[in-house]
Length: 246
Image (tube, rainbow, N blue to C red; front, side):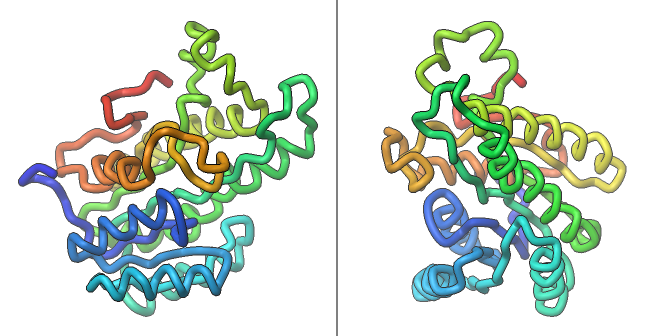
């Protein structure tokens, strides 16, 4: 974190009851941010919020099913009632439903269910929270993506991603990258910085804890974009090592 970093007063992290989302909420809370820990599972969400609150952070659980527009609106209303604005939105919630399924055997249903969370869920939540982001003096949006969605890497280095080809998941992240760019351009006049982050191959429930990276390290990559200074970029795709090609 640089001296010019913008520490958000109020943040919301989706899918934050475990994994990268939980560690992102923990790091933000340690910086003094009021964090709305959003999760679909109420029991797990409350337990996660209570655990982080026990560490001295200001963490508020908010129920949120990213596939349900009414749920997203209710979460926005809860943030508005408590804080009146939102400085940071981290779209972390995601699913991987076609693990181990060869590309030719993946079905349209795999894609529909994956896109419902990984793409449409991001749009649903962002749309609901935009009015609150517009009230912030330094609004930021960070979307959790993957290099599996990089068209450049897929086209130029197919051997690099060959062992991990996933039709539903990979194309959902490619679509999310396009959504990120569209938002970045459209919201630039509002001062809202929108970026995508590649957290790396991290051991989470998403992949059966098979990744070599840790959720805590991945959260640091998220924080780099969450705490961008006023002259920081928008419309970028980055990892802990630097820019990732679209």
